[in-house]
Amino acid sequence: MDKIEKLKQWISESSRIVFFGGAGVSTESGIPDFRSVDGLYNQKFEYPPEQIISHTFFERRPEYFYRFYREKMMPLGFEPNITHKVLARWEEEGRLSAVVTQNIDGLHQKAGSKNVCELHGSVLRNYCMRCGKFHSAEFVKNSTGVPKCDCGGTVKPDVVLYEEGLDQDTIERAVSAIYSADLLIVAGTSLTVYPAAGLINYYRGNRLVLINRDATPYDRHADLVFHESLGKIFEQL
Image (cartoon, rainbow, N blue to C red; front, top):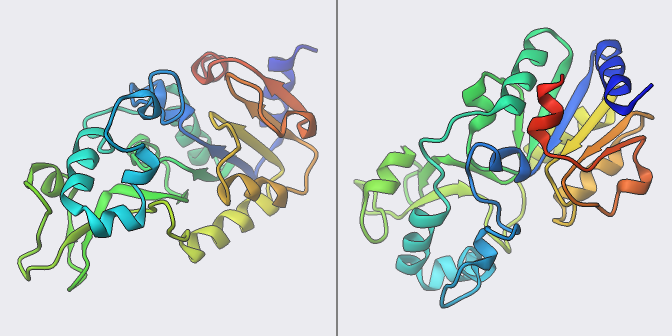
């Protein structure tokens, strides 16, 4: 049996699939990946992107942070691709119990997925640091300088910056889903960003599937590995 047929069989036999995805899930919708050749890391700025999107930089140079954030970190107007759509369908069919994502673009929800653990937050949620009022992504995108709430407080995106901890509730939901999964599909991630990458160690089953263009540190632990584009695999599913 070839690999894709084996994967199809596992999917048909599963009722608690968990999908763990990284930037590669969204690149096929046209959203640039941080670490790819065309990604943010290879574009020229006065400071490295990791520095700009750190908590320290946000506090010290907020205007510069927001200039970079608006230009490079706000993937608005993009549409879900085949991977997002297939996952939403599996959830509707009762096969998929959760999506755990490192992405901040909200495309899984746009495709119809309901149980999504957003490890790194979402550009679609923005809150005033003083009064806690919610503001839309469009509000931040269309504001100038540092976005301000009516109360005068700074509006901060609900995304996890470097040096900030992940949301504890989200981690617990993700761990619980992965722990009880009967099939874990890990896709579009280099599995080098912690603590997110370490979450797959909570999987207890024997159907770990890795789909990524390049090799990952976990390839040798997986039960099925595909070094191909996600879209190509999911079109066959």
